[in-house]
Image (cartoon, rainbow, N blue to C red):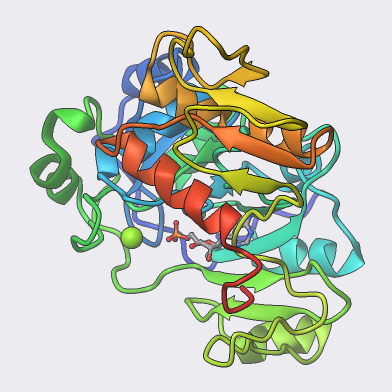
Length: 330
Ligand code: AMP
Ligand code: MG
């Protein structure tokens, strides 16, 4: 006889306010590149189709985030996670025990991962989790793709735990919010990296260290203050091998030119972040274009990008990428 499904450990209360029609509309909205305020068991997320770079750029714009942090990709279970990430035995055991639930796993991106590079901030890793909220799970199932979702608040403001908070905080930036009731407040997902041989706890959260260690053994903690990368810990910033030159209006011998908008007449762009000078398009293209140029050139000259709106995040990432050799390691 099949085992009756166990209620997930962090199941939220039922969601009488979300009709089937509202869910279908939200799924359509996501598939056409829109944003949805989505209840999860931790906090409300601002969700976008993680495979659509422009939709992911819209998340950063709506939050007013001055930098592109990698986003957690929400999946409906291990199978969808396996389409994005390389899953080892430890990951499988943790998923089996804690999913759906507030445990995010950082895993190597698979070669065929469909998630936009903007969502993973150009890293070769991806954070995945399966939320224990019936509305979130059903939404992901209907969309059939992973949803990138940070908390649904403006940058620096408090994380929302009700639909009303989201509406008050984001207004028209979140045109549709699914009201899944009040989240179990104050607990973010625990983040564990399985990138190296030793699992690392990147962020404590609702699933405790002890619970995780019972399944996969000791967890190490990142040495954040010393700036030393412990063996196997992933980089938190994308770091190309090529030298980057910013605000370039000329191009030197052997340099690639990464343009934004129309290039000066004397320069032939190797690639263009956005021919029509759209910052959302530039954000969506940033990491994949840098990666492509990095594989072919020793040096990359990057055209000036206006430091407003999403341009702030783009410039922040380019600066970090160009300064990685001098940074404190992570
Ligand atoms: P949140 O603020 O809850 O949306 O969680 C985002 C955090 O998850 C980031 O700031 C990172 O610490 C972590 N994270 C997400 N994606 C990745 C990734 N690809 N590699 C490493 N850490 C990640
Ligand atoms: Mg937040």
